[in-house]
Image (cartoon, helix red, strand yellow):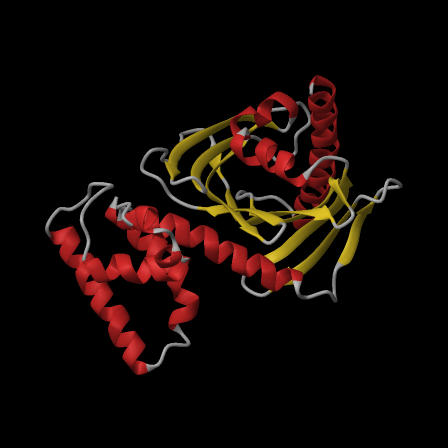
Length: 290
């Protein structure tokens, strides 16, 4: 458990560490000392007690210090706090990307208005951006894409299985997703272990995810463990029609293996277009049942 926790810690902080002044670097060193002490003492339990200042620091970083007292009193483990922090950090990166309006190149343009764009970003590589208008309320879409996540394989033929490995509060999940094995698939079957985090800001709903590690699901022999660098779905209801939703989806993945970039680019953009098509079909069925 601790090696995974340390990797989570490094993954969150290494970009910020370069910008730290001497005093902050000293503070990080102190944190590292306490993490080392936990390892020496054998505190490998998911709910191992950690120094109170670490809890306060992480709670402040993810906004838990502003939550109601009953919520703040919940005892998250250090690993759980890092999972939540990963989700929030991913949302911030996604917002920064969306603020950059220039440089997006069209990959797919549908007659319906759906489109997939792409743009390269430092340190993360090519990010794909899908845009669509869905005739479905944003809150109901959130329910389909987050609360009923494990049912995705029922309507998305690209996915064979989705399972929730761990729930952290109401807004954060650790999940495993397995892609479907289909004839003519140039990529081959993959699985992903991710932390998923939902967040509401005003009328917009954010569903973000990024690769993580979990002792509950180590890599499986014979199955390639791919990684989601960043995924962020933003649901914004129309100002004058709450029954319709502006759907934006940022996606960056490392599929692993020796796969030409040209094939990866084609597969990634087409997978987003196909996902929207299958999601519309799912929503149509759900609307007919209501």
